[in-house]
Length: 252
Length: 284
Image 1 (tube, chains in turn brown, cyan):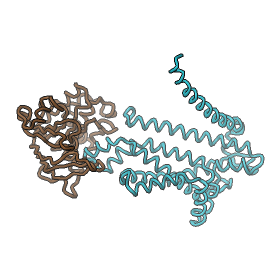
Image 2: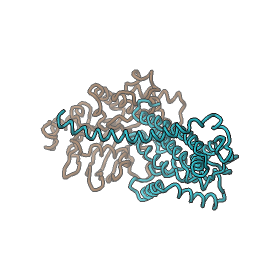
Image 3: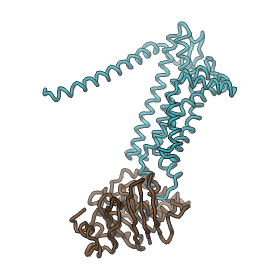
Image 4: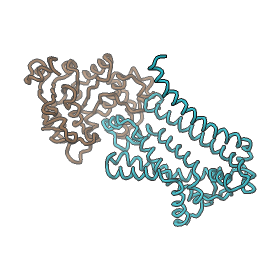
């Protein structure tokens, strides 16, 4: 379970998100929706502490993942990020071969034989439905794959580490509709096996995929969570008038 | 022709004439050197020792001295600049005081005239450290001169690696060291190598820093502790100090230019390889 308590993020003087408290239940797909600039991505970045890499960003409040406070001083962020995998908006495979993209993250984790590495690589690529497309060209550059294939490779790279949680920041926004449908189908397959937090612009996608939905909105110059509940509840009878307007397509 | 097009054609013509003028000037210098030097360059010229203060014979000892000086300076300057650049990129924020101070001093050092490095090298390596006039002193002086430019070029090469790669590898749970060794350095590799080759070009062409440090004896050096004359110093000496040495100076200049040309072509192909690797067209 991921739980945030009064989580705020500041970039210098500006507050990107203010006092967000929410719970992502184990095995659920939780979608975060909202207009641009409402702090969705910033929220996601805090969950695997990728926000640490952004100069000037500070975080207050608490985040518990599997009961562990991930902002506890001395926490090993490398270990955290292996447990909480992150998928970026734009596919970002390493400038290496397809095979090495996955081998590299595995090798860093522990010593394994070449055969073990290949086996995990095959499983991970099969999990994302990429194996049949690339099995004959594993040693070709990953950057030669199409955008959709690159994104699925990135998901495979994250899955190879056997994470418990997956964070996805608009994983389909840089893809064409067909590739996007494939990635969405993949997320459908990963449901229940992983706890997934997905940021999306696409309300229809959120509705199709998510068990729970959180609506973020800019209020008083900072992003805040204005609505949270099961997908059914949020889409049918939202409590907040702003999110009601947004979800029905009137505003935002 | 309408008014609009006519106005456009003036700057175009101006740019073309400037470009042609500069190219013609450089071509003239090159042709002059090639024309006057070519008849003296032969296998014998490249492999024999100079005679009669350099008026006769060849330039074999100078080629060897030049290459030795190059080896000494690069084997010191390259690892040091690589380490400094990695430190600047990985350990300091671009705006931090320490990083800014080091970057500013490097830029200042890069602008110091080479004769000043020559005097420093003479006072420090030759006299204070007792290395006397030697290829070692010359190489170390050149290393000091190359350090700022190599460090800055390497730093830029490392910074040009897209941050997405670093973010991707952090998100995939890779440590900073793994990222550096397997992602950043291989991606920046060709550009760093291009910087190093640029440094080689600088070192090959250097004269002022070497006269007071590596010296100008024309003997074949036995080791790095011996004094040795570089090709550029030889050109200077033939042209300025030895009456009747002009044709030898031209021939040596031609050899040096060919060496520089090879170096430059290497830079170009390495940079092309580098940009291909980032865009993925030609990655491994």
